[in-house]
Length: 138
Image (cartoon, rainbow, N blue to C red; front, side):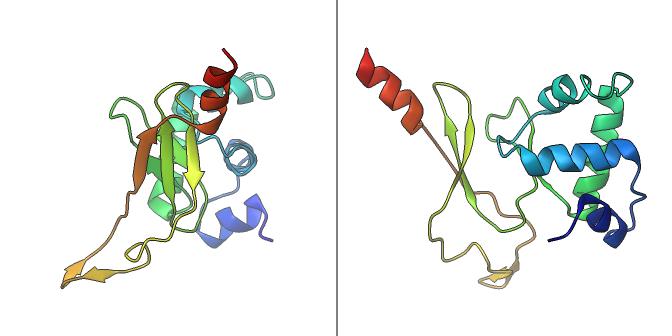
């Protein structure tokens, strides 16, 4: 398994302490966090970390293909470092974004009907199973 340092070095990014901590955070938290979520958690460990540092780091990671930006709502960007193509579910009740494993015949294709595919976005909107269970208990 590659470490955060190996991933950064393999992409030509200097493994600075903030970059390492942000990447490790993303690898540990599969909740598709926003910049604010990342900042709120990391500022407890690194009091001097700024949102600007996080934005710049995430943009560098995006450019190098280390992670993917998810914009389902149109009002916020979430980040995902899972490196296999997959779909997401946005829960309209709690706002959580959840990885969904489904078969999609197009997810791995780089060419569809002569068109070059550079990005793939597959998402669903609905109510997650946790929220459904909460509603059943009422």
